[in-house]
Image (tube, rainbow, N blue to C red; front, side):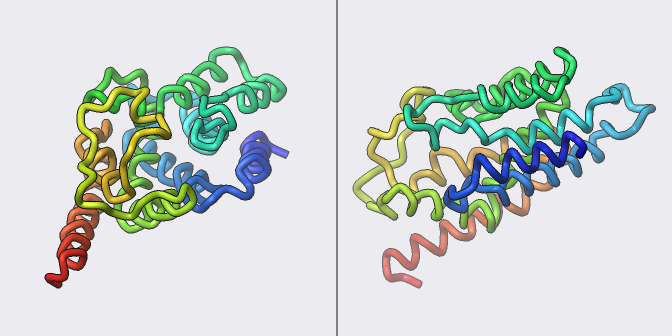
Length: 228
């Protein structure tokens, strides 16, 4: 059995039972999108200056495993990359390849950029995996995932008296004690993602999905206010 299939099985076993916002299907969609972006960005082209022999492998494995240790599903509210790091070690990957994968996964989250709209990029492999994850957070699927997650946590749908939080720190964004709503999450994160895409292919694909967010929010507020 090849390592990609083993990674798929690890995802299926460790993420089973999660709500639909961060489940196995999400991991597989991000993998497929990341590979598509990687191809558009030249990572599959030996003549490209970004090409390396393990680039697509790094992208695929990082995309598949990126949510295994997600803090939102841990008992102590902290990231835990030990499962995926042990998996990569047991499979005998070179230290260089393993470090590339782990580095992408540790830095991919919005929480690490929440206080600023851009950050220094570490590699094109990182960029395509992060863009793929963010594309899955916007558009029709992104809207569905947002409400799925909010519902699983018993979040308030909307309260006009609760304003979106601004200028959040990483700690405030990760905290479960902050008072917010599911609709506010659109303003606190989702509508910001289009301008945070790092690849040209990610930027291009984000435009339509962002319009879907804007259209949905406009309709939501009209219906909430009884104007639609």
